[in-house]
Amino acid sequence: MKKTLAWLIVLMTAAGCSSSLEENGLLPPANGDPGEIILVMDSTKWAGPLGEEIRNIFRAPFPGLLQDEPKFKLIHIDPNQFNRILKHGKNLIFVYSFEDNTRGDLILRNYFTNESLERIQQEPELFMFRQSNLFAKDQSVLYLFQVSTDKLIEQIRNNGDELLKYFVDVEKNRYHRALYKAPSVKGIENKLLNDHKCYMKVPYGYEVAVETENSIWIRQMDRKIDKNIFITYANYTSEKSFHLKNIIRFRDRKWRRFLLGNDSLSYMVTERLVPVDSASVTLGEKFSVESRGVWKLNNNTMGGPFLSYTFVDEELNRLYYIEGFVYSPGTNKRNTLRELETILETFRTESEHAS
Image 1 (tube, rainbow, N blue to C red):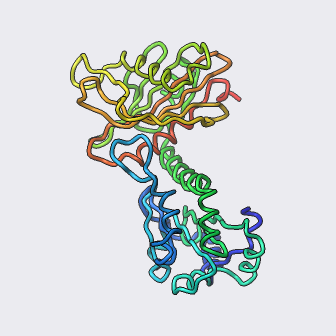
Image 2 (image 1 turned 60 degrees about the vertical axis):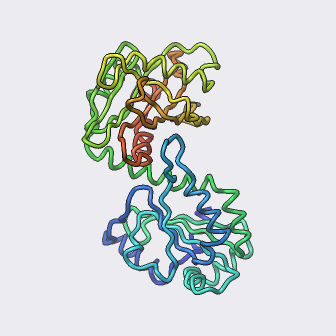
Image 3 (image 1 turned 90 degrees about the vertical axis):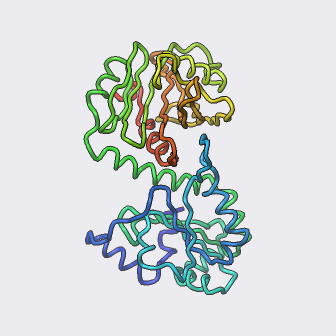
């Protein structure tokens, strides 16, 4: 679709100027917090069913958290308030349907050439367009458009997962560049390969907390946030290993060997009062079960969210369980979990890493 629409959408005079600035390396850096999206659309539509459909996607609760946090911080801006500062946001969405003539819609209409408007009316399957570095470096832009609000609502409803995934992937790419800007920890990476027959790109600042014959726990601690990666494995016996109840049992059995907290009797368990969300995903090239839930100590003195993947290394006939978990009382944890997810996605089996 991007190739089909590349010539359709032109942003007033800004498109040519931004293109020239980008070519000459003069675009300013994008700004804004991680997980923040600036949404530019008419205020009337924002308050109506179209705005509600968009909110349902981007403000849906982030899974596996005790305290509600939205998947994205969505900031609505009416088109006539979209100023030079806001144009430098990291993530932008422009939303426009053609049937109304409100002030906001008239401003957004100028973002399209007459030729593009005719093309969109002739081809109703065209409803979105992605663009990078429009007003700033490292900026991601999404346009959503249709001939009518009802048709745009239908397209957004039918393609909500794709729209969400676009910005999730954008955020993880930013985390990846930031995490590995400094050299990764080769000592831990080599230990994983030599002792555990697997590989993960370990960011600077992580250290081995505990290691056993078939498990390794690494962590990065500061005054506010305790970030953790756990890798463990066992012989693969049957497909029943992928049943969620068995994944949780395996997790709790493995974690019971590791002491946490301030006494010799504290160990981690899965919080059963909070449902664990699970889904089938692809990690690298492997089928995997992703799980998101809440951990706690058996004495209820500590807790937090976790994210995990369970999969098989077929060459070694080995079931792997890898997890990222956070301890950071009193803080929001969505962005930290996205950071840990980015790290976990670098995991490769020994044969995958060698190929």
